Image (cartoon, rainbow, N blue to C red; front, side, top):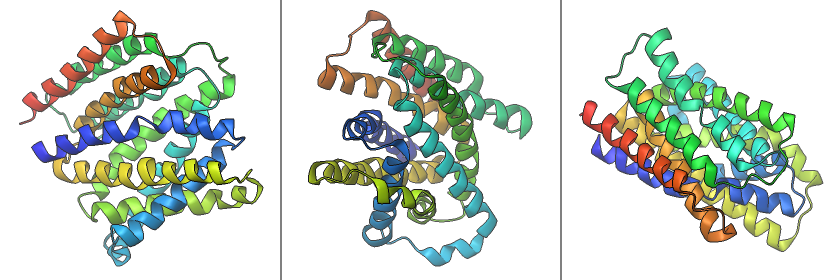
Length: 278
């Protein structure tokens, strides 16, 4: 399990540029669906050829792979769409309701109690709200951004639970490949209308490599090692302070004292979850 938690720390580091790359592509007039399509297609190519995804493994659970792939597709789409339609402070706070839904579903609906999961999740979410003080609040938040971020948080929980199950059946690179491929193929038609340029193509490709292939390979690898959707979801809160730190470095966002406290609570949530689930 220690290796799985190490993978989750890497996931947090890799995930940090996602909302920033999304907004960079928006600056080149790429819409969210075009960004998601490139992320999926490039990610699938990398997973298929570099990570050598074993496509025949899907025979082990065709329906489960389909469910996890659809969940990943919806989660990616809502995430990217929401980050382009609102201030990061509001959008991130709503998107990271996902771990709350994950813990609640696993504990109360699936009846899989995890020691200390409610306490750790509460610390993580409170920490997220505090970190949000340091994000950019200047951009107007549209109602579609709020709706998309709430739907994204629900898709997040669906993905966490279904993806964690599939990570025990199929190799991480393979289940990630199908999710990426499904996302890219479904939205590929939008690329016909994309405002292509050499610079935007570079940013879109980086999006697919770092926040597509590498991100989901590491995440599914962590799921495979830990086999607990709740613990993985709690550790995903680490993404929030990393995103905030990248924002400080790139956009001179506020180093708010509340954000530092929130980052501490998020780290504490991960540590406590690890201690309670040795």
